Length: 309
Image (cartoon, rainbow, N blue to C red; front, side):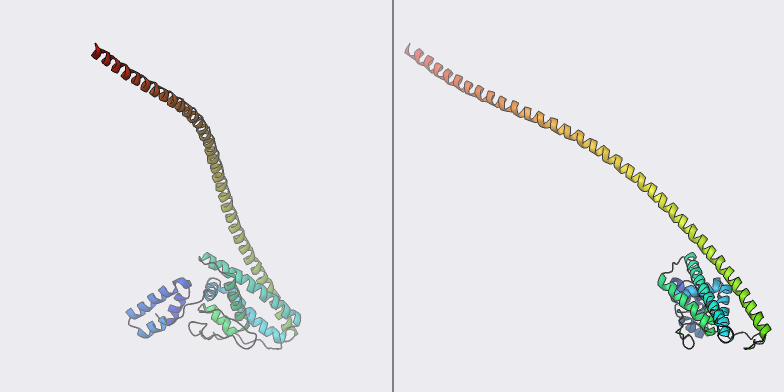
């Protein structure tokens, strides 16, 4: 196990899993007795989200990223060799490729379970533009070990200080001599034909990727539409159930209101009966008291008459 192998593993994992993966790799190095490697692993910085998305794109779509870097080389050659119209055409290709790869990077991140915000997508796009502008930045992107996004100011090389986890691998030696800066007419025609063929291939590939992305977007939209329709149907059922319950409760309220009114009428009638009964009772009490008094007086009179006899 060396630092290069470990970096390849670590910068393939999502940022939220990086710390745990780095700790596990450090512990493995310690267990193997390689303290220097363990120290180097522990010093590897956690990548930003934009850097991780760029690394993911480089690992999942190496051919497309390679074409992006080659387009940068064509643009640098075109600055000296091609006409303004050809430069403008390559510039349009650059914008199209960068936009398509940015969308593809967002789709790959979504498939990996991480949705990319617009701000992060802008950083990814800046990284792709920097990879076109500077061959070292392009090599850094292709290695898939970025720790932060890249940015090109338009002057000088891209600042890679602290943006790459490990030193860049040395570039492979060219297999063929470089093309002269000022080719002849036949070479000019061949170069233009080759550039045109490459443009057509890249345009076809861009359209294919855009079509795939459009299909994925359509599938996602259809899934969201189905979910929304199911939610609407469920809400409609809930509304019907709530309306039915409301109607039952209103009917019950009407029943209870009628029962209350009947009870109030019955209570009013009972109050009248109570009042009449009270009057009858009071009259009976008075009559009873009067009869008792008469009885007492009669008894006293009878007792006096008996004593006189």
